[in-house]
Amino acid sequence: MGPFDGDRQREELEAYLLLWNLWWSSQRTTASVDNWESACEMLQTHYTVAQARQDSEVCAMRIRYLQIKEPLPRRTDFVHGPPYYRLPDAARQLAVAAYEYRLARRQNAKIESQVSALADLLPDGLQNSPDVSESDLTASYRAGDPAGIAAHVESVLTAMPLPRSINPQASVVYSPDSRELVVEYELPTVDVVPRAKSYRYVKSRETVVERARPVSQVKALYASAIAQLTLLSLAAILKFDSERHIDVVVFNGVVETQDPNSGQPIRPCLITVRVTRDALAEINLEDVDPSACLKHLSATVSQNPTAYWTL
Image (cartoon, rainbow, N blue to C red; front, side):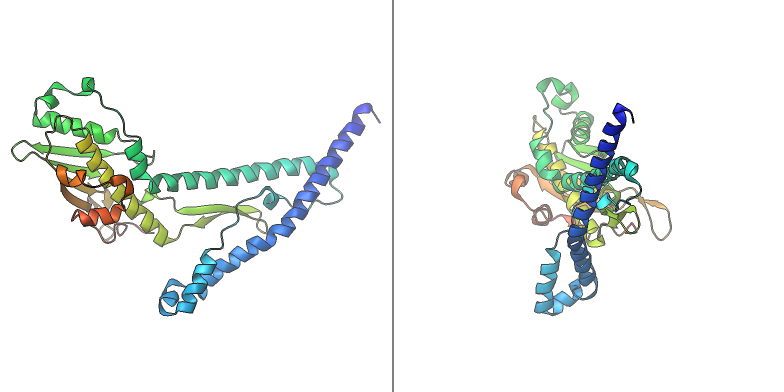
């Protein structure tokens, strides 16, 4: 046996012992996964929303089960029991487990980042709004030319700091007589909300599986996102109207989609609101509930903005 053979065998043994310890540790954490899966089953069968509304005890139990969190992916989840006769394969198994673990963590982190960005559209947009210097203002905007004002507002709306999944587009018309600005803003579709809630490894199937996001959560996230986009757009329009040409803004939030009945392209309006500069100035947008704020502003909001898509 050469001098390097002993080192290789020692490394193989260390890898094997590490693999064994990881696998043994995974057996002790299986209970938390089983507990969470059992909670999901109970919420779907015995403690549903409908049942909770009719019985206070069922409601209390539903709350308890909802508080059981889904276990985060662990490296031990991806480790299988090492056979005694494959000692040299331990290092490869460790590398595969580490890779699959990192992949699942990245997938979950990406989803969490997307959801967080949607949930904080308004506060993030208000805090990170771009600066517009005097040199950026065109002569036509300064002079009060309707086309110049419209072009200025369109550039402001397309420059708002938004997640990559949202591509802002707007069509603007300004009326100098009434000092009113009308905006048709293209809202994102419901696809902006991640349909997957999380990814986790199912050891019995040896694969990473997707856990679907509940439809109710998709609807809530989407409704909140378009409400926040509406308020953020109104705030940006009036903030960057430094010459104060605009007294009133009419905002129409539309989507490009297909009629689920005919399959023909349509542009339904999901949100319409008319607000004066003075009325918006009285609202602290950093601390409002977006839906409640739009209601306060007498906005017309679709009761089911996701009705045009199959969830």
